[in-house]
Image (cartoon, rainbow, N blue to C red; front, side, top):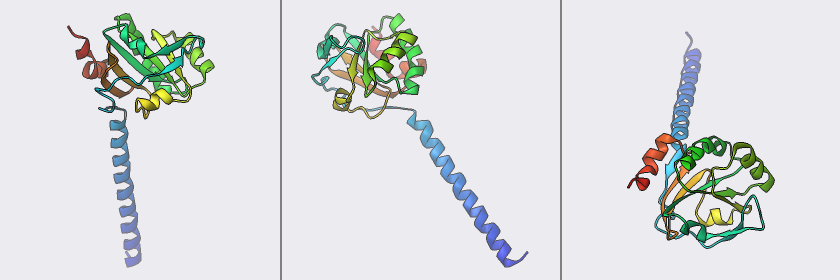
Length: 179
């Protein structure tokens, strides 16, 4: 083999190795990005708000929503969020178990949100319509879905970003509901 051919083969080998390395790093990042627990806002009170209900905008909702039950989940979602739609099935299971869930419809089209809830059924006791994302931003939301656990005093006990399923529920939230 000529020296030039050896150099070309070495360059191609190096390029392939670098590409494989980058692929592995990106793949591992995608696996860990699927969900995360954050302490942002944990221990803080839910910010004061007054926003309409998504199904009936003449009804205004506020932070008093969280005083009705000892523990309430606040689930930030949107009709445009594909992973939120997959999470709805599990949220229905939680609702059937008696878990109170309030939805926060984040930066969404109200008609699209209503259609999703009418088609799939609503797992929510109420849905806060936040078209500009003001409450979500005050809560430090950086992606959907995000779920908060809030006590009867309006204090955020836990926060999880990602789609909930049985495994994540057991790991992140279930211990709060055990007596």
